[in-house]
Image (cartoon, rainbow, N blue to C red; front, side, top):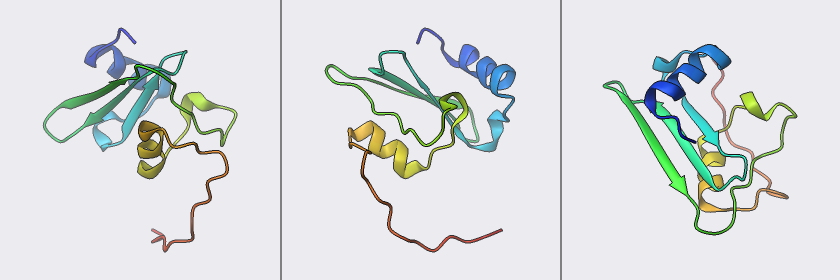
Length: 99
């Protein structure tokens, strides 16, 4: 969790091979799951949101085995940040526009 803008951008470019300028949020969590950083490009520059828990840990979704490159919805990220226990949560059916 020592990396800042340049280090996190390097990880996204070199390890994930993703486009930083697309507007996606890239989430980094430490091993103990007590700190989280979210890197976002907001049209004028990069923003890092950083949260450190004084007690407890973040629950990571376990949809796939490869957590290193998992896509999350904004709703799932917000639940992670708020400490919602995701085990047993059902998402209700919603309209999804197909491209």
